[in-house]
Amino acid sequence: MSTIAAFYGGKSILITGATGFLGKVLMEKLFRTSPDLKVIYILVRPKAGQTLQQRVFQILDSKLFEKVKEVCPNVHEKIRAIYADLNQNDFAISKEDMQELLSCTNIIFHCAATVRFDDTLRHAVQLNVTATRQLLLMASQMPKLEAFIHISTAYSNCNLKHIDEVIYPCPVEQKKIIDSLEWLDDAIIDEITPKLIRDWPNIYTYTKALGEMVVQQESRNLNIAIIRPSIVGATWQEPFPGWVDNINGPNGIIIATGKGFLRAIKATPMAVADVIPVDTVVNLMLAVGWYTAVHRPKSTLVYHITSGNMNPCNWHKMGVQVLATFEKIPFERPFRRPNANFTSNSFTSQYWNAVSHRAPAIIYDCYLRLTGRKPRMTKLMNRLLRTVSMLEYFINRSWEWSTYNTEMLMSELSPEDQRVFNFDVRQLNWLEYIENYVLGVKKYLLKEDMAGIPKAKQRLKRLRNIHYLFNTALFLIAWRLLIARSQMARNVWFFIVSFCYKFLSYFRASSTLKV
Ligand SMILES: CCCCCCCCCCCCCCCCCCCCCCCC(=O)SCCNC(=O)CCNC(=O)[C@H](O)C(C)(C)COP(=O)(O)OP(=O)(O)OC[C@H]1O[C@@H](n2cnc3c(N)ncnc32)[C@H](O)[C@@H]1OP(=O)(O)O
Ligand SMILES: NC(=O)C1=CN([C@@H]2O[C@H](COP(=O)(O)OP(=O)(O)OC[C@H]3O[C@@H](n4cnc5c(N)ncnc54)[C@H](OP(=O)(O)O)[C@@H]3O)[C@@H](O)[C@H]2O)C=CC1
Image (tube, rainbow, N blue to C red; front, side, top):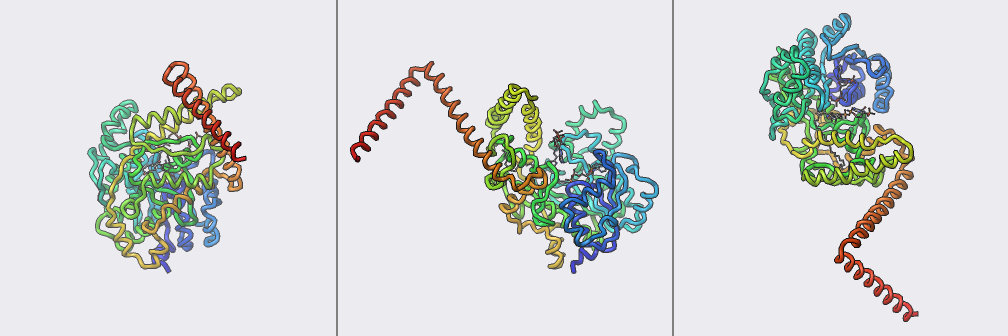
């Protein structure tokens, strides 16, 4: 029996961000490996016209939870959705619910965050910093609390090149930022934001760094650990390979490439693609929860869960494998044939953007207009290129993350726990993982049927023919224009035509002789 699985038996666990990508996989694994846990409290807000209960049912009815329903048939009874909005005072939790949470919670996994790179500083601080502070305050009033696990990001200190498993100080105190945001108006905040975030690439990574500072300064006597994953990708093994459900990180880029919208990107091909499967992150989270509660380390330990130092893959290798998978398993109704040009040069990147992205979008919009439809491709392309430009920082650099604590923890686990809660990324076969990843994007994100593959392949063939035809026509037009203007081009043209004519005459004469 796994020690970690047994540890969670009978426990009351509080999860924030349970409706998010990481949160869902965390809940799934908890129910599957510790079906005898007492209850999972999840802090949820109503969203998109759905009540709390509808949101929970939708999650439990998804493919991700199929196995859970076999091992834990009463899973519905073990989830307690609590109305909460982390943007509000006291999270807007009712008195009764708050009382229950305070008196019963044993373990907290704090996953909720805004992960948008372009959020306003006010909102990002509210969620990634103030809410963390508020949750810590709640945690300090929980008599049965054994461990508080805070999820940060490996990029919270991406202004550094080498990052250790320590909490780094931020140039401005988190308290000062929280206080000043209370009285500054939005226009002034927008103005000072670049000065505040300094060499952080975006508000997200900056506020996650501030969130860590809060954990360090306001931890009181709590048993806390911080986990820093790098780019969280689709599941590797559990509950099945390739599960993914949002367009963040590489997912949106894989879709845009597979649909033929994005054919070039400003990226450093040899830079490390530090993707980490979501199930690996969740396994570490559960192991850390157990270790923190049972071994009670004297200080707050930080754990890096990254792939680059143990089993590195680079963007070139990833791109090649993604394209190879598109050959076998194409996405339906692509706009153009998938292709990937990596360039680290700004000029070449602008050239590709003009020729490979904007021009086809404009041509397609003209076609839509001519056929009486509303043009939309240029708008879509602008949005895509904006998104890509926000990711560029991360695909043109490599970082080194030390992983002493993560390795230490691995060595503390029994062989059974190492198997059940595997976070040893050295065992990951990248080619297999990427293929499953692309397949997962097709199945679970795009919800495309595998039966449509032959049709998609046919369409790709048609697109290839159109591509050749278009290029040939373009070449002939350019050549015709050149001939009209340049004597030299005319001479070359006559030379080529007469050469072809002579070759054909010779070929015909020799075949007549043979007969
Ligand atoms: C030719 C190319 C070669 C490619 C080779 C093949 C591919 C190989 C893979 C390699 C790819 C390389 C890229 C890798 C990218 C690496 C990213 C690294 C990031 C590291 C950061 C640290 C990691 C973290 O800690 S947190 C997680 C990262 N966070 C994010 O990724 C969030 C980033 N996103 C944003 O900030 C915003 O979405 C933004 C600003 C990019 C776009 O905002 P915008 O307002 O324009 O759009 P949205 O409204 O957000 O969305 C547009 C559209 O999508 C729908 N949507 C949005 N989110 C979701 C979701 N979660 N699930 C489902 N759908 C979503 C949204 O509703 C919109 O739809 P509409 O119908 O238009 O309303
Ligand atoms: N994905 C990645 O690549 C990485 C993620 N991380 C970290 O992992 C954690 C989880 O990320 P991920 O699952 O990808 O993010 P998601 O965006 O998928 O999930 C965010 C979660 O936070 C919840 N949330 C946001 N705002 C509020 C609010 N006001 N009140 C209540 N709940 C709220 C969301 O709820 P709702 O469904 O209602 O919106 C959702 O459940 C984050 O802390 C992130 O920083 C770290 C490294 C990489």
